[in-house]
Length: 410
Ligand code: NAD
Ligand code: MG
Image 1 (tube, rainbow, N blue to C red):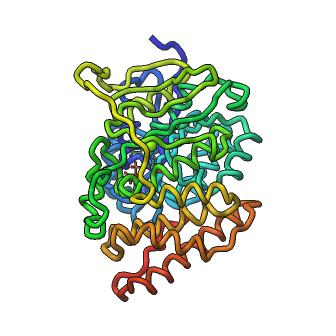
Image 2 (cartoon, helix red, strand yellow; image 1 turned 60 degrees about the horizontal axis):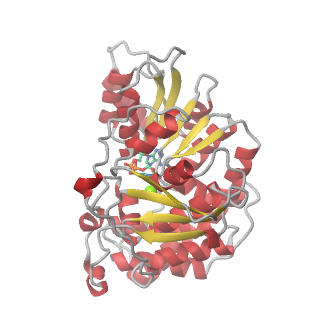
């Protein structure tokens, strides 16, 4: 039995796929963790239900209307929960002095400010929101170095790499690492003929063979932009250069990534594809706690396959690597263009193959600047979204009643 006072946890994006898995793990360890704040953008009813179950001190939504809805739902229930709204409130609960651990599981650029607030507040930050690192990597890692915060990767691949590296790991070179092998399943269209990709629907793109996830990351997995974003994420997290990282397609999603050492050793972290494993690992690090995930049965699994990625079929992988090689605001532009493209695809405004085409056009016509501060990130993000909308309209046309999706910037 754990004898310390429970650690107080803030879950940003608690109604999402990662948020729900996080609460599932927390509920298994009430002696170790208590829930301080839950946050969401919509799905207010789910959030109300979570408040009833976890009695957080705060529940935060993005908009005032939603806050009123939530207050109405919780009226007369005598919960300790105060309802707040807005970006400032998100940043406030993520950096509150009473919080020890912050799960950063908002999707997209909207997660950047609260996640940075948690880093600057010196929290133990569990990073699921890869977009915030991709769009503001140098700034984010700079803030981390200047703070007492501890950053633990939740993305299963990065969590696997973290587990295969010594801790602490100052540089890959000094640890004897030759390269990092970043694995990816190849998504639902790994073997679909390229000619059939033009007509795939959002539901087909979101039907991932191994993982159940939110819709944005599901589309990213189908284009393999998810692997591209993860490539950039790994460069920042592990102080790696693009040449240090190789993407390997592994359709079964059992090996979550690997680290190749100078002496010929190849360390892999394996497990059933269930995000509760990396969540439990990061929550309790360096301890190990129950996650609710069944042990991997390798005999039943039978075989593990590996192949090289097909960059002709998945141009997003190349675009992400190029953005990281260019540096500066190029990854910011890539991320912003991708967010607009994915939302347009989900809205039926853009064919699947148009996602990569749109991103490439935005990247080719964007100026690369240095990311000196958050304003520079914000500006690069906004200009890239505007450019993506112009190009979307030019190439595919958008109607009055369904304008270009720009709503989810930071
Ligand atoms: P999701 O869409 O299921 O959930 C997103 C959460 O963020 C929800 O609670 C939503 O209400 C909230 N949110 C959305 N927009 C917001 C905004 N503008 N402001 C404030 N809150 C907002 O997404 P998910 O699949 O849980 O993914 C969350 C993050 O974790 C993403 O960055 C994703 O790339 C990353 N991730 C997810 C998985 C997975 O298995 N789902 C795996 C690795 C990494
Ligand atoms: Mg991942």
